[in-house]
Image (cartoon, rainbow, N blue to C red; front, top):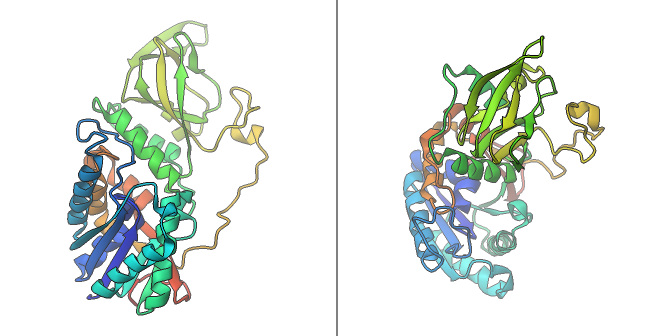
Length: 367
C-alpha cells in the first residue's frame, strides 16, 4: 500500500501515543511517513537523570524522537524551531504557514494532528492542532484526522490481579521496576488507555494498609519500604506469611477472586505505594465498604463524539512499545517488562476523528 502520512505534533513522544502504531502498520505495507514536532520538548520532565540535564534536554529529546521514528519505520523527521510551552504565544498565521510549507513539500495523502481538546488540554497540543487544521483547510488535497483518546473501560487493577495470581511464583520486579511502572501507568491512564484511579499512598510504620476480611477495592505496588503479610486464624493466632518490598504487588488475590481480603498487610517501616482503584474513592467512604456501598455515581460514558476511525495496531505493538522506550527521558522503560496481552489490551487500537472531509466510521486511513 502506497501513500504518504504526515503527523504534526507539539513535542517528541506525542507521535508515538497519537499515531505510532498506525504509522508502523502503514509503513510496513509500503507507505511513506513523516513526523514534525513543533518543539524539542526542552521544558519537559527528566525522568531519567542519567541521560539528560536541563541544558541538554532539547537535544536529547530530538535524538529520542529520531530513534523512536526509526523503531516505527518512519522515514522523515523534522522540527520547527519553537520553544516548548510557548506555542500559544506565537503568531497563529505564521505557525499555519509553517505547517503549510510542510504540506506543500511532503504532499501527504493523510495528515494526523491533535483535535481541539489537545488530548488532555495541553496548550501546545491545542495550538499545533489548530494551526495544522487551518493549514489543511487551505491545502485541501488529502484527509485530515485528529487523534482521539476514548475513555477506556479497561481496568488495570483487574487485569494486573488476574496476571499476578496466574503466575507460578510471586512477581518480583527488578530494582527500578516500581518507579518505571508508576510512570507508565500514570501516563497511560491520563491518556485514557485505562480507567483506573491511580494515586500514591504513604503509610507510617505500624499502620494496617490492608485488613483481613475487608472488601477488596485496591491493588498496591510497593515503591519504597517493607510490609509484613500475615493471617489471623479462627482462634485469634497470627501467622506471618512473608515480607515484601519495592517492586512487589499486594492485594491481588481478593480482587482476582472477587472475595474479601485473605490476609493483613502492615507497614514495617514507612511505606510508599502506587495504589490502583476502580474509581476515585469517595471522601466519605468507610473502611472495608465496597464501592457499591459508598457511591451512587452513575456510570458515565465519554461525553465527546466517538471516533470515526479505529486502526488495529496489535500486530505492531512491539514496535510501538520500542518507540515509547526510545523516549527514555520521559519513559525509562524496558519493553519486555510488560506482558504483551496487557499492551495489546491498552494500546492495541488507535482512534481518530476524520475532520476533512467528514464521513461515516471506517477502519482504514487511505480507503
